Image (cartoon, rainbow, N blue to C red; front, side, top):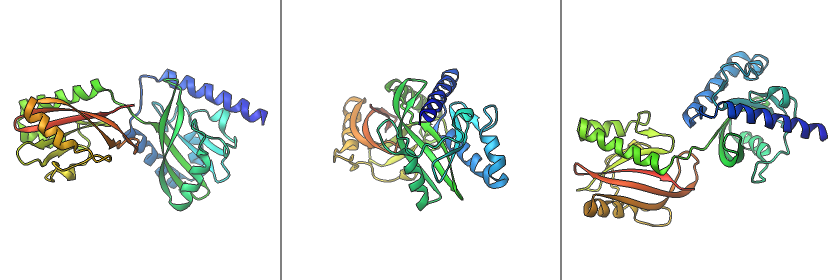
Length: 283
């Protein structure tokens, strides 16, 4: 038990130093998903022995920014961990809990019993910010092993949201509404960033003209949309845009990054007969 605690402490220091060294290199959820898919394909193509060696290589392709690949067996023992391989390989973490007291590794094993791929949410100490923050992990079960890549949930600020709305309005002015809407509807474009995205609603008919996170909503009626507490958020946005031209609306919405229902504030602006909006999730 004492040896296990010492190894966990050493690993925490190693991970912390790694985080501090790359504090300016925060990875996005998309980058985490890409690394996860890359690791799964590598394991399937090369087998466990070669894959573990690659995942444990701190200078290799499976450690990027603040991302790394880890693997546990069905007994909760690390067989690979790109963050601190010297300290963690062989360490049994089955009964280790997250910062909220949840049995994290038991949950990983349980959820992958039912499906080969899953995503879980937990709470972990971010060594870069020295704060306990929500974290997510993509998981894949391959035989008796569970592979994971985790990332910290991104929290964009009010300033970030305002800047994206300014950029969207500038896009309308420079390229016209039609081309701008195409840009707003591109999930991989510059108007979808982490937990921020641009949406546009026609002021006359109340229909979505663009929605960066869910482009399939384009053309659907937005005017009667309510949040999870029954608040008619779009009606309020439309009235505000028509009356004042811009403003903010507060409501409760599902965060596409954390997959949790959270408080949200959206900045809206009237532009060329449409309502443009960008919201951020409030802590």
